[in-house]
Image 1 (cartoon, helix red, strand yellow):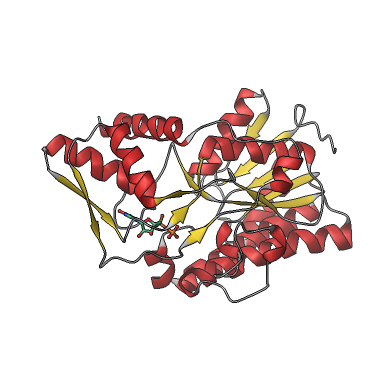
Image 2 (cartoon, protein in one colour):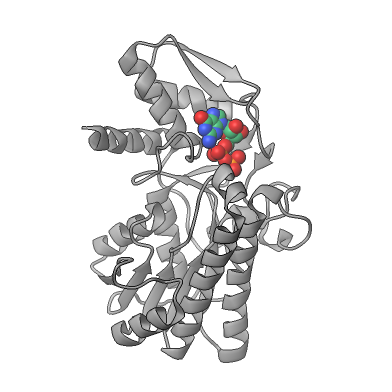
Length: 312
Ligand code: GDP
């Protein structure tokens, strides 16, 4: 297995304010690495010259490319131009500048939505580009597929050690708890908590409760990404997940127990279920010696604690 020592390296985490970026900073901090970050006021990653200048001046040895424009189904569907433009621009600017500056290692982050809508489950890396994408987030997906291809092209033509990782549905510290734009885990934490506080008798969960989803705690994801930076160097992107999924109904009852809400759960079937199942095949990641550490129960309780700390 590849051994890439991060200990003496200067590491730039692009997107350090996001849920994954901040988890990567925590993980690298525990390891005593030198981490550099840049706020949007210092460098706008959509602007090529600013990005080039930042990389040339800062001279990072390693880059975690966790900067992206992200959002739920509604945001993706409403602002397709913003999603495709900003994500393509960030990837082009960072990856090309990293090549010019001789960056030793770059890890680009994508998402499981790069895969065809009806990919066989669990979804293996080679399902990429075998069928049509989910139309609601294809703009984001196309930009992330381009990111994978950029890493591959710079590896092929210039020998750059650029890799890409595709995390599953993430939740955790720093999550978005806005009910309009959030994903299901933070939405349910907030709904159950507010129902408990107000003494409501029911909590409404969207859809039928039957869809299955895989959920990964963001700090586990960060740990896997750091592991890949240390031990992986190849063309293929790598799925990052826990290898197991649960129904939304199971998730809802686990969140209910975490929050200690004593009322009933009702399902609003006028809301969409979305894809019936989205489970990643994580054999490649596991074969590199990484397995998840945080159970769904532990992760949910840590997320709830963080949510409470933000409330007060
Ligand atoms: P997806 O994985 O791209 O479908 O994104 P989401 O995390 O938004 O939704 C996952 C599943 O959870 C879907 O079947 C939703 O209908 C369901 N769900 C149930 N209640 C909620 C909720 O309050 N908010 C969200 N976002 N999803 C919910």
